[in-house]
Image (cartoon, rainbow, N blue to C red; front, side, top):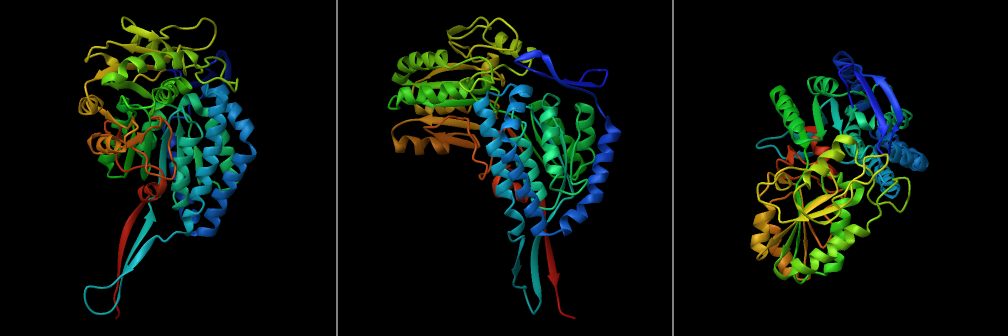
Length: 457
């Protein structure tokens, strides 16, 4: 965390006495200077051409593959990500850079017929300039990659402000990227709110992932400046289970989505809506599945639920289940590290914070619904709209749910967690602001369209 003394400390959440780094934060002037250096480097990066940009992104992908074991171990140590998930994240990050390495060769415009007479009408997409990226700690390699790779592919330069808790991961990523790109093209700006605010006030395009209050403030500042902005701000995601679903399979999917990485994902399941006769068997199967999930040392490949990122996060999760009917979990294991048992609660009143706010922890509420329409209404009743999963054996039921659910992503017979990096990512309502991330949508966000008229003399 960033303290009043402008010291940034990053510690191992599984062993808080293990400090990875302690540095002084650079301040607002350093942020402005980083943007200016990136702005000076941007024309050269753009004019280096498609071959150079593609080769650079491909080289980053290869370097990530080569250093995969080291990087996964760093993610385990700095942000408490279970080893199996950490390895998958590094592989995903490399695939993202490899995917966008092809983007510089794609067409950036089109030729159109003039309205009258001879000449040419052209449309062409051009980079904005300097992309200011603000990223969270929970995916310390994948999220910076899915923001930076398309920005760089399109010809922008990048200044990345990572979450303080993931500073060591960001610095290691920068070392890899620096081997492939010219000076000033990719810069990591460590720090907290001071540096983040300064970056939003200076960059030419901003992409943010983090909490709702901060994301809304970022969106307001960027919008007031008239620059493009996207903000991904979390979710309160529901899993709807119909009576005809494979209950055991659904319980396994949902348990992993509740407690995987201690529930510290914006796509984690926090509400489980059981329709009609599904309630009783799902209650038993899901509670059993959660109790069976391995909890403990994130460096153990068998661990599914590791520590929360810090003491405050652990305490907030524990406070959220106080006074509720607990079906599984509801305990804080003793010993070092910020652990909480995977927890399922029921009989939660409509105004409870679990049904109104995102609690970033391994915790979900089980809610009954009379029928699918009732379940959809419950799912849509929250301020967020990121992702919903629907579990059913009937295709007609699944298709019927698609149009009624007000979320950016809907997954049928699959966990709410899991993202396809080549497809658009984002939600509705308080979950997202601005255009989508990932896939081709990201290339459009990091560029603007120009229209050219070429008339003969």
